[in-house]
Each structure stands twice: as C-alpha cells, then as structure tokens.
Length: 336
Image (cartoon, rainbow, N blue to C red; front, side, top):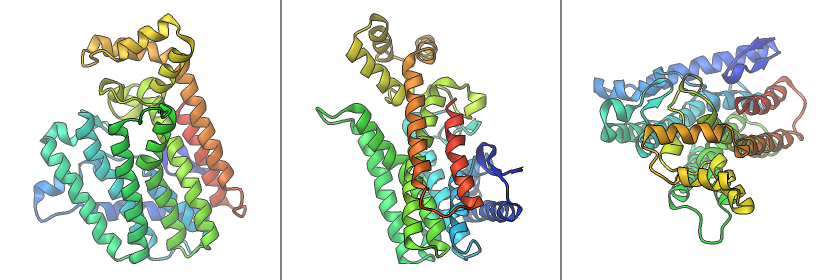
C-alpha cells in the first residue's frame, strides 16, 4: 500500500499510483508555468500560494476520474490546472473578504501586499485559467462558466443571508453547493469528460464531486473551530471573528431557539458581540469546541460523505473507484 495526494490517501495499484503521481507532477509544473508573468512582481504574487503548497484536492479528483476513460488524454492535465488556478484565485479574494492573515501556513497575500494586490492577483489567475480553458473546447468553457456562476452566486447568497422564513441551515447548505461543491464537481467532470468516459459515468462522477465538495467544506467548518493554526494552515476561528455563520454556529442557534437553554442563549449573545476582541474570540472558540453543536456539524459532514460514496455505486469496481471511496472516509477523518 502506498500513499498519494491529500489526507494520506492510499492507492493500492502501482499503475494507478504512477498515473496519479505523474499527473500531479505535471499539474504542479503547469501551475508554475501558468503563474509566470513578464512582470516579476506579478509572478511573485501569483505564485505565492502555489509555492505554499496545498492538498491539490481538485487536481487529484481530475486524475482519479480520468481513470474511467483514457487517463493519458491530452486535456486532462490542463483541465486540472484550470480548476486549481480557479480555486487559488478564489482564495486570494476570500482572504480579502475575510481579512484573513494566514493561508496555508504563510502570510495571506492581502497581509503581505494589501487588498488591492490580492484582488488583482486573483483576477490574474482567473485570466490565466481562461486562456488554458479556451484550448480545451467550447464544452469545457461552458462547463467552467456555469460552475463559476454557481460559485459566485454561492458567495453572494452567503453575504446576503437567508430570505425571511428560510431555514438558515438549508440556505447555508445551498451556499456550500455553489461555493465549494460546484468546482469540486467540475474537477470530477473534467477528468471523466477529457478522458472520453461514457456520459453516464461523467454524470455519476459529477454528482459524487458535488456531494464530496459539500462534505469537504463542512469538514473545514469543523476544523475552523476545532483545530489550531498548525493543523489547518490558517487562523482558527476566522469565520467566527468575521461573523460568518458556519454550520457549527447555525446548529448552535438552531438548538438555542428550540430548547432555550441559558448557556446556549449566552453563547449566541457572545457570538453576536465584538469578536475582534481577542479575549472574547478565544472564549467563544473554547465554548464552541465543547458544545454539542460541533458534534452535530461533524454528523452532518459524515452524512454528506456517505451520500458521495453512495453516488459511486453505479461505477464498475476498480482501484480508482476504491480511491474515490477512500476520499470520502478521509474527508470525514479531517472533521474528527
């Protein structure tokens, strides 16, 4: 048994391991090439997060999904570069919106160079992704455009909040489907599509990616509360400080409204206070880490991961399918 990709994913077949490893090496080279500019400062800023590393979760999904067709087809590596560039671009923008100071264990671009440079660098990455995408054909452009629309819509819905009468948890899960699920789904779709897999297989893998993407983000929500910066690579409680209602907080508010327990109501009031104060922020983190709402969010993560696993049922049994199933387990493991 060998290990490849994020979360210590094990790949039992040597040929599959070789294909995936070679693909990820080629993606890394493609990322560095795509982030070069004639302007040295732009190259430095654009490669800031590339060189900081990362799980390369989306490229890994492209490589595994390509195993259901021709894994050596020419469009596979470029499409993996496209999804990772798109993901990286959103991180630059997210850090500006969240006023984050750390990303992937290094100072965020907005901390290092300011908000304007961070936003423009994200735009530069989107532009480079579009250039590569143009060579992959009109269907690839359409797929990416629809996913990008969903991604932006998800972000706007998060900012606007739920409409009156809408369940906040349902609203939030819709937000995650757009913000995270859409691009993870495209990763699986591109891998299968570029490899020439049957359309039924493409659809199955797209559904799997959507559900896995939501589970992945829910695990991040748990980590934002439960982990320290060494484990997560970013500042703990960033969403908490900015007042962004992630699932553990939504589950807390749901419980407080249902049961009316004094300690739940008090914690909600603390979360509604000014958490830019370090002492209040630390106390909110401490209380949430011990609260049943965090465990409920973990259970929600497990549910979405199980749904992703179930989506794979129609696919033929093979090592690539086994690896995709194991990714579901790995995502759950991240959430504890």
